[in-house]
Image (cartoon, rainbow, N blue to C red):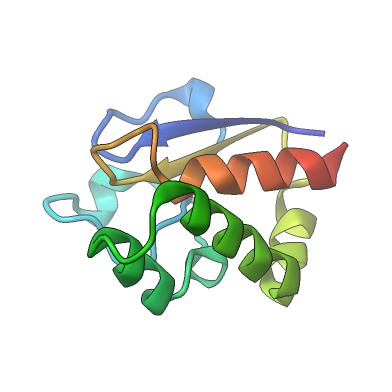
Length: 118
């Protein structure tokens, strides 16, 4: 099982990041592809546009968002494909752009990945 960690895309890339995966549906503002140094852009395992917009507009609170995103992941075949892509890596860093590091879909994704990989 790889070590999976979270990091904001705005922090500098480091060798200790290992396999760098952008887990945002939209490309982060102000970051060039060269600067991002990502190995994979995993758009297909991010929250749907509808779910993301509902959360950001305040129509869904954090617990509801977390529940709905987990449900999306459970039904998303790209999630299992992603697990196959990372399962043999030593270190995987999930990169996200959100300023709020406590309420980011990347934390939900990390927990779902760790549960599946155990």
